Image 1 (cartoon, helix red, strand yellow):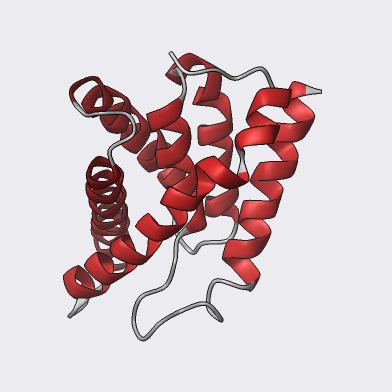
Image 2 (cartoon, rainbow, N blue to C red):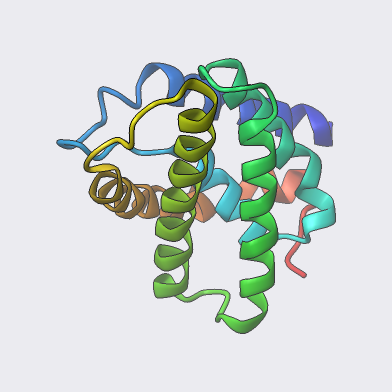
Length: 163
């Protein structure tokens, strides 16, 4: 039952990200539901409980991207490690901490992915990537702030608790 609910949440996030995220874009800012879910899981729960679902989110994102398989899986795990480390020093219910961590995660994810793709495919540096990443990060932060409300009941069903 526990893994079935994780699978449903992950599939719903991937379906939204691949189908509806472009429609929800505001100018250059496009929400990244997968990073929002990674930050929420890493900030709210013990990393040992959510390690596999976070990696699965990255692998599923890889399936819908042009990059090498495993790129986003590793990036998402790195983001989860950083967020779980910073969580020790931040107030768990702090809105500012969630906004800063989510925005930083979006910028880091896009910068790492762009770096790997530019090396692999000899792409020139994309202009405006930092500004677009910042706007997308702030937009994604709003989604991250809503996730505890939306996922409170499923997390109780999966017996996930706060550390």
